[in-house]
Amino acid sequence: MAQLKMSETIPASVPDGYMKNARGHLVPLADVREQDLLRDEAARSLAEMAIDLNARLKAFKAKALGDITDLVRIAGERYEVTLGGKKGNVSITTYDGEYKVQRSVADRIEFTEEIEAAKALLNSCIERWSKGANPHIRVIVDRAFSTDSKGQLKTAAVLDLMRVDIDDPEWMRAMTAIRDSIHTTGTATYVRVYRRVGDSDQYEAVSLDLAAI
Image (cartoon, rainbow, N blue to C red):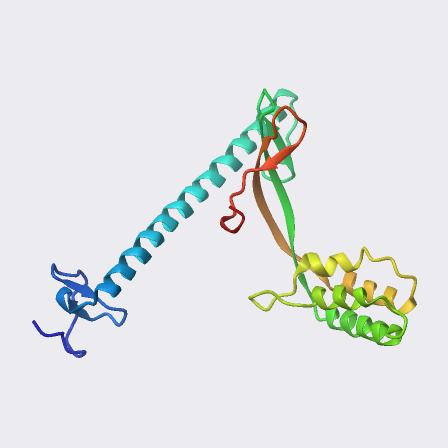
């Protein structure tokens, strides 16, 4: 059978002996290259595994947050006090100390237009210090104002600048500008799981980050 013309209507389901291409057209299976079939199989298998993992991670997070909230509520009822529920950092540990689960709540931070004033002040400082300043300062500032893949400033890198103690009026004005530019847009809740290292008092994270595994 010949490939369907673009003007023909494609049914919602794909009949036996055909594959649907990226443009939504049915192509006879016999006309699909072997390499395309192999690529389709690998991509589909991996994508379906990822979707399943995503669903399981969502279910895990929902259960973890629900269980921790219940523990906080039960503790409050025992002492006849209403506790914060879903808010606040909480750490729970198994009886033998082997595992630890933490719920942590962090602010979501964005920077207002005042961050541009901070950047200009910092660049002015570096230019003024250029003859005698440590070149690492330029690296720190450039890294702080670099953006991620979404074009957003890296919050932690910008805030790290405020830890650099430099007794210079212009630098201090820049730090004030950074503080004034911080705008909290909400909170994010994280669940972190740790396993004790042997019999020590040290714990290592059980990574749920694909890039860290």
